[in-house]
Length: 175
Image 1: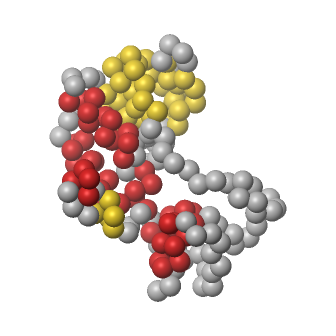
Image 2: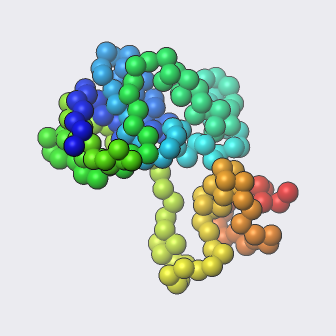
């Protein structure tokens, strides 16, 4: 088992994890980001609509542009990143056990930041019955299909709900 020591381990490489890593690095800490996906940026990578960055960068950016700003800042540092790495366990002693294509790794940290981002509610939580309802997707899943994978999940749609993501996808699916 590979073993790594760091001052700050950040679980999650989305916007919060990236910002935390950059700030911890500025404070002189040795930083490691552990991200389960194959790239950094989190949910922002599928949010191609504008509306990000006004507070932090003083200009309106699409999600991927906003994420790229942080990724570019990260590239100017010596922050370590483990992509494609799933955290399996964490102990009260700040030992993190994770796995990736190279096997199991144990990370010993002085501090741990949990920045795992947001997740949509499951189909069961939003009361969609059945084990595998064909053609039923959450708005976030449909957004990932269209914006990241270039796949249109159908030709006719019914969108339930009135939240931001539902409205964004209603607009996005009418092209």
